Length: 372
Ligand SMILES: *Cc1c(COP(=O)(O)O)cnc(C)c1O
Image (cartoon, rainbow, N blue to C red; front, side, top):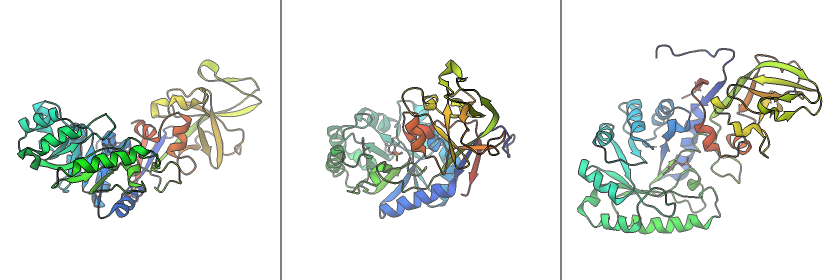
């Protein structure tokens, strides 16, 4: 790509994506669910890490099914995969827009049909083309009722249904009774389509004790290193690293105030460092720690350093008083995600979930892909 930048400039923050870890995570889930297969959910630019490199690495490793949300993502994905035989499913289905359906067919992708209305739209534009059906089993977001599915099952066009799927509302809560209720509802509907494959589990669903793997699991978050079992240690390898450079270091007196609206006051003389990363990079402003949450921490070497004051667009300030003086110097890199700080750690400080941390990673980083 002309104009692509090949080396990081000194003041740029660095996003490192470990494609070997991504592939290892896919292999681990594929082995766990075999003989079911593991599809990769690569919507939202593969949760922020980059659709093209992620899908190419997974496809080379043998992943043969991919889920995206939008038709435009399916088009990009098909181009990235080239000749590799891969099934692509669009979770958001299709609208009654002939151009969109042509784009979907051109990408040889399958819509995930979420209502009987959408099913009739699909049959009108693309008769006899295979599709997936999304059955609602309690989330009330996308998907048709069991009754709607039953009506479709009674028609000759039911033969076009290649995959029946549903989605868990709370699979990361292994004790939540809704999981068993959704499995029961799904079991009843999938019997109606005996020739179709069945799919229910997302990342956390894979790890439920009842192993509701069916024919295909749809893993997203866990592939990207997120913890699918929040109550237990993370079984996945870390994929995403974020580092930012120190730009300035200063000593302040007790009582000195930091950042917009002076939300932090130095309790004693402190040594502060300004780092080149802010909310425009995806370091959410809510991780400033001014709303009753602990502020985000970064690591300088092995020393945790809290963020102080408000995170601003391009900059944040950290307290490096506890770090060795010679480490806290302009140009030194601090860790925001990596060996010491998980996606879930940062999410907790920002009052959100790891999924939002990943999908907020901005385009401004210098991106470094390793392995793959
Ligand atoms: C996003 C999504 C997934 C993937 O979920 P993870 O928790 O990231 O594994 C699976 N299925 C559907 C329908 C989704 O929308």
